[in-house]
Length: 374
Image (cartoon, rainbow, N blue to C red; front, side, top):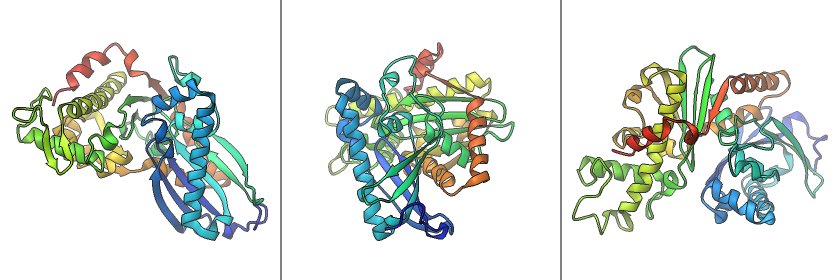
């Protein structure tokens, strides 16, 4: 088996990883030819410790071994999946880029999450990082970590923003990452504003029987159109007690609707608050990029039916897939001066961006309460 020093450039393989709270996505490629060798995803095994990052933080705070166990679970699962999809070619793996939210990266790297548990939310390290990993077989590889914006606007958002080439013109662009954690970035060439919203698992698997959160949104949107759910989110009779059966085993109940209202209202209110900080309206935004697992599968028309997004954004939507993974792929394939240019771009985006804890903004609660309605 070749060591890292013995790997000829044309032999090297790299892997880009989007470390999602619910799903982990991986793309592998030859570093010189840039030919894709494998692309796959698998469930994050840390979900046994809770569906969202705050639950996992609590586990780490209550049990010192929990963080170590979560990291080992992830490393083992990633190794198994890479072996499964690369086969013997895994011997040529020389570089891995891991993008993800701040909590997931802290746990993976063995950093304390104590500072992420309560205000003022101070991460240990959100700078660009490189680690050399030694494997038992004697084969070493380098792991690169893109930097993040803040405690809850992570490397996944910065990687995505760089991939989308945001912040290069006077017009503001908006990135809305919809998943277990909803993250928002509003930025132009002078200023940036970021925030995260607590969506929990609502946008991943809101209702038992729905394979994706997008199915739940589609179902709720259809019920609103049919008048089965009113503007305040109340299921009408005779379905209030028994729920609305969409398919066998897939039933929309009142609690499902309430949970969904809380999540979609937080996204809408978060966007509104960032626009207020920038002193702009929805009409002033150039592009609205929708990323994340939900963004990929969702019928964007449903987002407006349930009033998750401002109506004025209808003609500006660009469904962008997994921008965190695409951003990780971009870093993976760059070397030398080109990589330094990307790191400089990261720095410029970070330096002009102010991230907010939405609950601390005086206008948030009022906007949020109004945004709960359909």
